[in-house]
Structures are given as C-alpha cells and as structure tokens.
Amino acid sequence: MPPANFNPPPARVVVLGGGFGGVYTALYLERLIDKGAPVEVSLVNRENYLVFQPMLAEVIAGDVGILDTVSPLRQLLARTDLFVREIESVDLDRRVVVLGAGLTPQTQELEFDHLVVALGNVTDFRGIPGLPEHALPFKTLADAVRIRNHVIEVLEQSSVVRDPDVRRTMLTFVVAGGGFSGTEVAAALNDFVRRAVRDYRSIPPEDVRIILVHSGEHVLERELTGRLAAYATASLAEQGIELMLGERLVAASPQSAVLSNGRRISTRTLISTVPSSPNPIVEKLGLPSSRGRLQCDATLAVKGCAGVWAVGDCGLIPMPGGEPCPPTAQHAIRQAKVLAANIVASHAGARRRSFAFKGLGKLGGLGHHRAVAELPGGVRVAGLPAWLMWRGIYWSKLPGASRKTRVAISWLSDLVLPPHPVQLNLGGGRGATQAHYEPGETVFEEGDTGDSLFMILSGRVEVHKIFAGEAQLVGMLGPGEYFGEMALLGRRPRSATTRAASSLDLLVLPASDFSALAESLTEFRSEFEEIAKARAESDAARAASGPPT
Image 1: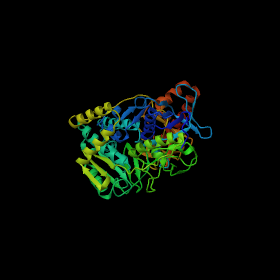
Image 2: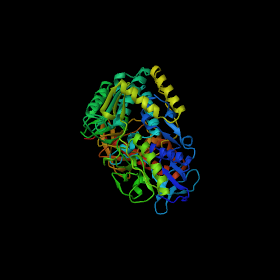
Image 3: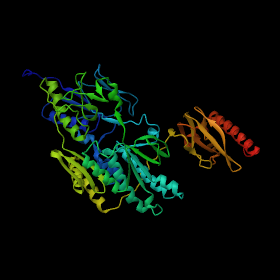
Image 4: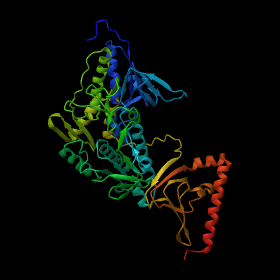
C-alpha cells in the first residue's frame, strides 16, 4: 500500500481510437476524475464522433437516419481533450504520440504516462486481386453511406438501360462474408432494394439478385450454435437471397466477382465484409502480438512495455478460462471499465483488477423482421421475438436520450412508410484510380464512349478492330504502355476493342483529369497527339489492305 501522504502528479493518459473500447475507457476515466483521481485524458481519433456499429446496416436500408447512429465525442466526453487527427507514429522510448498535420502544416506531439491502444481492425483487401479497386468495404459510417448511394445510383441507371442482360448485371448485388456483418448487410440490402424497386416501373422485380458468398456450410456457423446457424441460412434463402456456400471470393473486376470454383458472377456491386487486419499503427509498435492482436495479461496491460494497455479488437485479452476474449462491443465496454480502474490503480501503486466477463449473448438481424439470439443459459430465440429483442437491446445501449428518441421515431415511421431512395451526391471528381481485369475480360468495346485513359501497370492487353465486318487483332500492349487516348483527344467513340490477355492491372485517368493536363501542358498533349496520329495511320493502312486472309 502507498503511504498515506502519497500524492502523485496527474497521470497523462492518451487513448488511441474512438470506438467502443477507446471512448468508454475515456468515459470511465472521467468518472474516476470526478471522484478525485489524478488523471488527464486525451483521445485521438480520425472522426469527432462515436459510431454505433451494430446499426450501420440499417443506414444502408434507410431504417435509421445517417446521423442517428453517431454521437458527438465532445458531448460524450466533456473532460477529455479530443484530437481529430491522423496518428503518424508512436515513440515508446520517448513516450510520445506524433499526430499528423491537419489544416496547419505542423505535426503535434502528445506526451503520455499511459497509452491505451484501442484502434481496432481495418479493412484489408490485400492478397485478393481486384478487391482493393472494385469491392465496397463495410466497416465505417462512410462505408455505409457510400454503399447506399451506390445502390441507389445502380437503380437509377438500370431503370433506363434497354439491354436486359446489362440490366440484370447491374441489378446483381454480391456480398462476400457470412458472419454477422455480411448477413446483416445482405438482409438489409435485400429488404431495401426489393421495396425500392417498386417505384421504378421499368425494372422487372425478378431482375434483382442479392447473392451472399460464404465459405462455410451455413452462415453464422462460427458465431452461433448449429441450430441457429441453420435457421439463419434458411431464413435468408426464404427471403430470396441466393446463397453460394462453400465458396470464397478470389478476385474481382469492374464487371464480375470471381469465386474459388472458377465461377464468375457478372455484377457492378461487390460488398466485402472480409477480410480485416490489425491497424498499421498496432503493427508498428513492435510489441508482442499474436495474429495481429497485442498480447495482454488479465489486467489489459500489454506485455513488453510498462504503461501500455490494449482494449477491444486489437488486444488479445485472456478470459478466466484461458481463451481469448471475443472482439465484441459488449466485451470492449466492460474491458474499458476495468482498464480505467487499473490505470488509476497503477499510477497510485495500488492493486489492479483482472478482467472477467462471460458475455450477455449474441444477436444478429436477418431482415424482414427476423433475427437470431443466443442468450446465457443456453436460451436460443429466432424469428420475430428475436428481432424485437435485437432492436430493444440495441436501442437501450444507444448513448443519450436524444439518440434513443431519434432512432425510435425512425423505426416507427419505417413500419408504415415506404423507403426513400434518395442519393446524396457529394460531388467531387474521382481522380486517378486502379482497375483489375481477369483474363478474357473486356476493358472497353469499339463504339463505347471514351471516358478514361488507361496505363498498363502489369499484364498484357489485346487490341481488336473490325475491318470489313470482321474482327482483327491489331496490337498487343504491355506494362508501361497506355491506350484510350484517341477517343479522348478526338472526343469520339472508342475506335477499337481492348481485352485482357492475362491478369491485368491498370491505372485509370478520367477524361476530365486528362483534359485538364492536356490543356495545361503542351508537351503532354503533343506526345499523345503524335501517338494517336500514328495509330490512326496504321488503322487506315489496315483498312485499305482489306480483310485478313
């Protein structure tokens, strides 16, 4: 025990991350400060709000408003210093966190006595060709809004497409991953699209396809008991969701999702809820970890460095039985309470507590007023009762009376009012992007509108033209070469068809950016004009020589 006159200076606590673990750690520290604990708290996060992630799928469906799922951090944490910045680095030797520059060009350093790592996981599409370029992630509020806007744009565009094959491709929505996130996204998307399509008279409802790809025999088989997983699988199928089980997503392109069995699903919408990886900041700490999670003892202290703690998804925290704590919000919130008490106890030289929590059960929405619930004591609930329980429990966990009121109003109105497929056009150009194509896929067809310039990063491209009614291979392009400039310079349709001869990665420059460069840089435009002229002369010579023999 410390001596009676022991009065340490305030402990400087820096919390990295604004999810459940980080925010509730700061919140519980504030409560201890009110009781006299000598602590100063700072929290660093990219956004100035806490997202209630269990309701993100309902943002896509429009069951709740976009801002109904977020709570301002400055209102939740009145005594915490908030830094809305990117984390540039963490120096454990100097005990400082370096923050990236914001509107001002200078970086900023935060000194700490105790560092709480609550950065969670990030979406990681590396290792699967085409996924970073063409898949829509689902993890943040921005992701949910982006998916909703994209789906509404697909409905608008497909409503004026006359080619039925193209329309069916556009109306095929693929979701990869059969965990809680994947099933809830697929269910919410299915409910929203099938209700919204009633307002589009030119879209046949039978053209809509929602496909869920999962590597297991049942969805949610890792999260729930076999009986509930089987119910969830059957429930999704009954609602018209096509389940492709026992398959994995292995590649993606602008027009397709490629599965492990070699099948290609023609689609313009691919949503992936897997995989995820540790936040890069966590990896750079150089502390003991296992599968990307920092190794902790039962007090949530990270092994290998005094004064560093972990909470939530990024911490490998042992349970009383020895198994690792699952990465759920309910566990993160209770970890935060123990962690706050342990930080204060550690600073005062007192005894620390061990984390022990068995969990209150698991809940998952299945759409169409259905859900599954697995509760302590072996209680299992499915269907409408589970859905009412799912909504009631999550509603009770929303922070603040105003948030609860807004969500309740949204839910009540959703029961009687049709969905509002309103797209939020936030403007702005898309800039240069990358694209991936699988062998045999077409980049553009002869006669298409010229909207981009393409530079080959890896792979090869076949160039085909039609002469006297017959298609002829006129060229093969490789890494470092580019194509598509003729249509942009002449502002005319594509004069050839280009196709991936192998696995192909491209840098895509939109027409607006190409025009801006061409108008500003004379040499840039002259070089492309010379190449376009040479290619046009070659095409003319081929046409004059007649069809190939």
